[in-house]
Length: 293
Ligand code: GUN
Image (cartoon, rainbow, N blue to C red; front, top):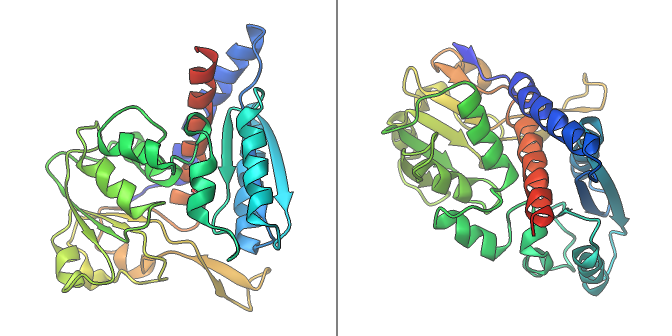
């Protein structure tokens, strides 16, 4: 059984990016610059954004963290985005989701300049993804594709079952796995809360991507022996024995499923680290596109 270690695979991506930035700086060019907007103080979002910013610094990107109050008006957030769109020093913009109730996530996503949309959530970029055109691939599905490449997991002609149809993970993941890409060409089944016989569908999968946000949902009796398991879940579950009072649990019952799978991502230390790798690659891509204009 192969553990698909996100630390190793993401390190390879970060090393490559670090040396590309070093060459840029050596040649007298500016550094790629990511701006992250964090609204409110959701603990999980704080952790993710802090990690994104830290990883930028670590590979030599510039980064700006813009914090806005939980109560901020939608217009103020949209104004902030417009300012970043117009700022020539900024290459990539990300607004951490979810957002407070008074703010329309859709309006926010559509306000970001598609050329700086390093999350790949703007409808113009999603449309390009669907048509197989060059674009920004949403960071988590991108990171999963990078992980499949790093560990050279065969995908051509395989049956991939994606559980969860979110715009952030499940939907773009299903598109990528079915596309004519080095780690695509799967036959894909996209499952969701209205899928009957989900366990049976999963048992026919060569590859399962679990992205539904229910800790421990995928059990051993839903997995074909030898299947490849990608666990996208990162739910905080209360654990009084843990230092922070919680621990992170994936959507897969790891102890059970790792006994039947041929390869599996751990949580933590799996897909989460690859998400950051995907974001960093998108930021460099945004920089290069802007510099070549
Ligand atoms: N919330 C959960 N995942 C993501 C992501 O990839 N990008 C942003 N902006 N917010 C998220």
